[in-house]
Image (tube, rainbow over all chains, first blue to last red; front, side, top):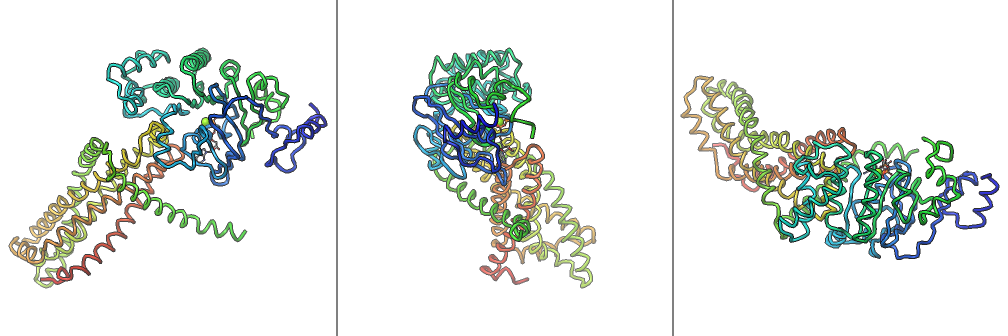
Length: 291
Length: 268
Ligand SMILES: Nc1ncnc2c1ncn2[C@@H]1O[C@H](COP(=O)(O)OP(=O)(O)OP(=O)(O)O)[C@@H](O)[C@H]1O
Ligand SMILES: [Mg+2]
């Protein structure tokens, strides 16, 4: 695409966002203009002009995103753009400096502690490094949410936990402590723990990083299977393109604290945005460099 | 330009005040949360109490005897022999050991041994995102982690104060032996000067020291950031802040106690 073309397109669409760097070339402006394709559903989670800075580092810089109800949404973006920070805003572990985060229409930053705890019961979260409790073995880790939030008997718990651990290929590792496991195994155990309560909203922070390609593919299938079985809204963070091709219904691409483009999977794979194209084809030539 | 220079000069101080403010808030939250039902922290309280006891009893034994013998014992005895008044050492130990040295050594040991262990433990959990995971799973870290540590450290520091007193005085007794003095004079002046006020003052003071240590160390652990190096930094800062807090509080407490109970100022 030439500079002339992209310049024309921006004028055409006329929805240039604020916060585009000064002195940006028309091509760069095109990258930033933040097209959000409609998904025709309610938003389960909504980011409204969210700004979050750590010191001088503005990680989220006017983020606007709606996560459609009942679908698998995948958030992609280069390393260090604030994907994990996004997830922490949704469950109220971080608060925005400006803007608002809504979960099913309620503002997370405005919630009292009690409301926040009640809201979190709807969630299952897989943290980037698994976040297993170091003082408990795998079995107790996965059983923890059941013991915390349900009145199930120890037999029922055993059945559910064993099933979840078998699904992720950790059937024989129930007695192992987290520090005896590989990174990939910890991640899979965290995955099992996130799903054990069959929550309405599940957040996966890079379920596929640290796994071999075959297990990645199997895990993606598992996400789809569980989603078909239980329904609910799933948000999956990744930078794995192979996962992006098979897992999500809806996709959002994040860069420098903003949405570059969001839409249904086919819409993004057909995008003309040079950044999106580079990212989804994994090429070295394009707007994204090492920086 | 002026602003950034001023920022750089005052930022550490501002940061410190902010942290102290945050710790005050944490103290309030901890007390509220300890009182408000439910009370799920019994097991953690016991394990923290036993853990601190296991870590502290031996270092405290060694340091109180050594300190009691070395500083108030030998030094004061040396001075008192000038006046042929070595029997006064017992009275001096009431002032020195019960009022200051025992609480002080006790707090240093608890902060340095148990407090640092708490900061390192919570810091590592924070870094591994365990604390985030706990919160998302509906577990309140203040109620389930801070409250039991707060109560356990208060109890243990208070109890270990009595233990530190006993062995501190034992250090003084050893000093008497070294000066070939029999103990009758030591005990006589000790008991004429000792008062119940001194004893409860000492225990209450150290119990509150325990609270300070717990809050500082939990706060520093739970706000650690920046990987393993960050945990190391947190431990280091926790010790410095806890010690400073204890010294400042000690001054206020002792002054208040002396002002409200002037009879213990009279040396008999
Ligand atoms: N608690 C924090 N304090 C300070 N800076 C933070 C904090 N959390 C995140 N950051 C910064 O925010 C930026 C985004 O971090 P984040 O972890 O969200 O990246 P990411 O998109 O998840 O990257 P990756 O794909 O590598 O996981 C980074 O520059 C990071 O240094
Ligand atoms: Mg991340």
